[in-house]
Image 1 (tube, rainbow, N blue to C red):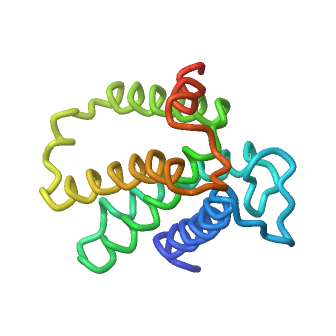
Image 2: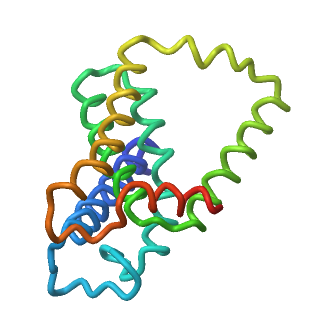
Length: 168
């Protein structure tokens, strides 16, 4: 069969394509064949459906990044994770944020229950931390700058978006 990493990469690339279309919709692009029925839904038509898909695939992008040892692939995975993360925030769906929080708590509980030592998280190479910081910075910038400079920006301003996420 197809190796697991190739299957994960295919899913991450598909999610990045969905994210590019969704980001374009939020930025005011009118894509004729994509009719959003509830916010910027990209190929799903509905932002809630798109966000649930991204929530499913986003960890795979980070897995590929953290497990890669080739610099060129790390850059690719970081860009893909940044695009997916940006559109995930643009969707503003509380259900997806709730799902992400539930998954994080469940995964943390499972790891602690199985004896995982949390100090191992800090054993990542410095370049991996740099990529994670870069992805975080990219997502923050993409959620704060475009509303200020794009006249047709379809998302909420930053503070209402943060308040919406915290309502979970």
